[in-house]
Image 1 (cartoon, rainbow, N blue to C red):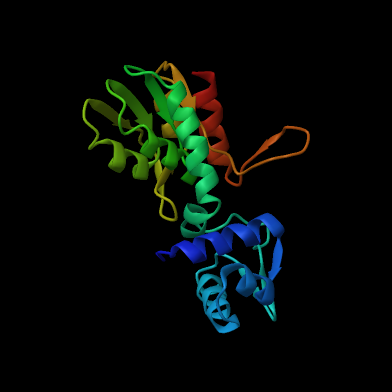
Image 2 (cartoon, rainbow, N blue to C red):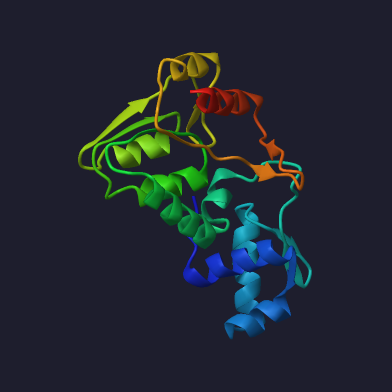
Length: 199
């Protein structure tokens, strides 16, 4: 896993907002040399956070799901703002599902001051984080563990979800089409999300 510095995180955000950015533009924006930007781009390309091109960088193909470590830093400030707004809507003493995703993990972080939460999750990152929160009960759903992001999916997960009724469901998705259709990459994850919505 890679840890990006502030400039690199901002650089990645610019690339994702603009789809393609030149080394020259990035160097001018940050007030650093072209070599510094090239090193940043090379490092992030090596970790599959972006695509390196001669003279610039672009987003990775949207045909495949971006690697988990890339998604952790992708649009991180936006995820944190969204998480803070969502956390304000969740009262203390609430029960909630939190599913797989880096955005839902930011929501879990934003809930750290809440009291009396009962959290049901199929995300081991969320479970690991929230089990240390004071006055928070965490229930981890069983099923098939995905190595790439520590998400749990499958028929066993769906069956366990159906045993609970909760106040809130915090569900991440991969994309939203222009017509509002929600998209994801893994059909088992889609089935899990549908079960959460039903409950």
